[in-house]
Length: 146
Image (cartoon, rainbow, N blue to C red; front, side, top):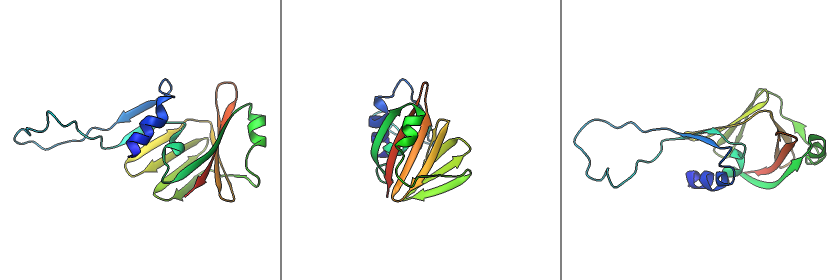
């Protein structure tokens, strides 16, 4: 289910998306007659994903996304937003977020994603915001954590 959500969320960003799918390692033995008709399941997903939190509905509900100049986006942070100081480890449902300098990492099970820098997390009552600089401006995503 997570893999499906990631594929759907990333389809629109496919030109900027880099995902590395881990390979499972099997044991030697007699050939499996089903192996030729059943593709192997990936053991984990990993890579750069600016939209990573949006692809984890069990942990976060995306409330909004805005793009524009950083000054504009800073004014649209939820009321009471405070920057998450680095290094930080935040836990929501079965997702763990690590903020290290200007990078954000998210892990869920065996899946691990990096939100490319510069990325900054902000917390406010009932909200988690991600402000990320892009080419000529930035992107602000606001989430309700579960």
